[in-house]
Amino acid sequence: MNVYDSEAMARVLAAQGYELTPHKKDADCLLLNTCAIRAKAEQKVFSYLGRLVGLKANNPDLIIGVGGCVAQQEAHRLLERVPYVDFVFGPHAINQLPEIVSRAERGGKRVVVTDFTDTFQEITQPLLDRKPQEESGITAFVTIMAGCDNYCTYCVVPHVRGREMSRDSKAILHEVENLAAKGMKEITLLGQNVNSYGNKEGFGSFADLLKQIHGIPGVQRIRFTTSHPKDLSPELIQAFATLPKLCKHIHLPVQSGSNRILKKMNRGYTREDYLEKVRALRAACPEIRLTTDIIAGFPSETEEDFQDTMDLIREADYDSLFAFMYSDRPLAPAAKFPGKLSETVKHQRLARVLEVSEEITRAKHYALVGTVQRVLVEGRSQQNPQQWRGRTTGHVTVNFLAPACGDLVGKQVDVMIENGYSNSLLGALKGEDDQCPQPPTEESHAA
Ligand code: SAH
Ligand code: SF4
Image (cartoon, rainbow, N blue to C red; front, side, top):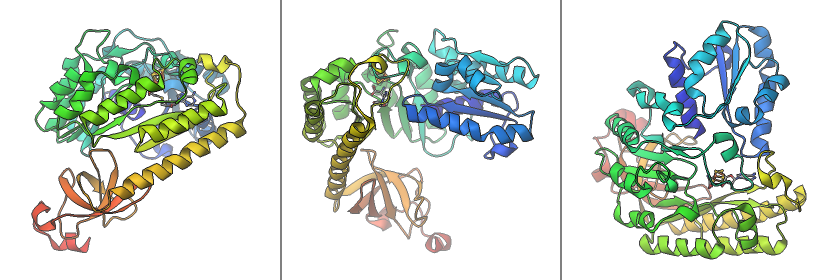
């Protein structure tokens, strides 16, 4: 989501003559897009800002702006704490950047822009004008909603990103059509809770939107993130069975396996509801890859509650998971809940979750050895440029060799899996002669 927002910032400022530079020291204007989801992310912002002091001292004309969720949360406090920051802008102020930056260029007063807007269009209008040359690669993100209305008690998102707002489906379809026409093969739809898309605005359901995107020529794969278990409808579950372009992966954050803790988190489902949906998903689409998020050490979590989470991890049979230590967020109600756990206990519980999750993921990956996986090729492997890199429909990275092939980027190919690791699979192109897009050249042999 932040990558998408950063692209929007670059795009809106391009109209004012700004270009991206990869080197901080060459920049006339530095924008930090920040994350406030956990205390650690927020601390990183301040340590990064600390390292900019020298740049500003060498170049007093340098403009420094801080945007995103830490900006929204800290607002005036940020200007006070970091005297060389010129302006602070929240996630809803992206469209106003040209004005804010012009003002800073003229040496105007330092400003804080953190008002919430009323419609999605006011936040990301510039994204509709994505230009072909700005796109690279074969996969693209498309935001379909902003904000969140769920108010999970640990979470800062509703407080810094505002109320849930869906984007008009016509604008989404228009953007996806444009991206497909420019050669994008895979589209990832983004939102904090994509499966409640359109509920408030009456734009039609998320499953309807998926069907419409499915019909756009050129789109080969569709992904989405994130889904809230309470809003996972039977219609969406069925979409995995009926829409072939919909990738066979769902990230369905459970957070905890204890009903007592789920209630305190205000998640709106029980472990039984959740496991029932998992069963329905697997019945509709047996090959679906299921991933989740877990919070270890929520206030008042007992060893028994934590055991419920460990049991649920095994029962849901996740393919992979992200786990986080509970972290107080000052704007979120849980920051004031009694029964805070020590850092040591939180660390130990996190380590236990990670240990089982690594074991499960390795076993799942290893079980794929000897199978053939369809892979959308994204480029060369970063570690070994002789290998190609792509992803399965389940979103697992596959590195593979195809020594006799020309350029495979953007192609879907069959790869025979030869080894499985905790983060990726290794394989070789199956039936190279049939799948090579063009006859081998001397260069591709040399590569
Ligand atoms: N909208 C998504 C999640 C967005 S935040 C959803 O509801 O699933 C991504 C993840 O960060 C969450 O799933 C949660 O596991 C974690 N997270 C959020 N707030 C946190 C906090 N205060 N401490 C630790 N982890 C947190
Ligand atoms: Fe945060 Fe809950 Fe909204 Fe996800 S659904 S963004 S965890 S409040």
